[in-house]
Length: 122
Image (cartoon, rainbow, N blue to C red):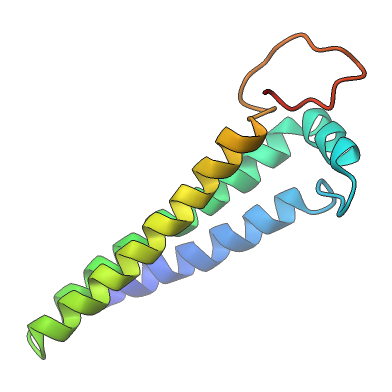
């Protein structure tokens, strides 16, 4: 039980820090400014991305620990709950990977770029 509390706290703290790290980088409705902000503050963007990944990893750990806790009560319900939560986590990870694949990862791939370019790798 204490482990699940520790992972829950880690999940909330890393999510909050990740959100704070990205604050001000993303400008709604202005992709060029957002890309310029991300290129100018790559470490902050990566810190936010790492925080999101840590949230999902912590969530998976909490799900596993809850399964272990509730398995003696009702193994079937505990297994269904765990599988549903893991499917949710997989969906979140896929959305992160889709964003990176679709829009490119301007902070992961260093390259020389044209100043008129938006900074997105196509």
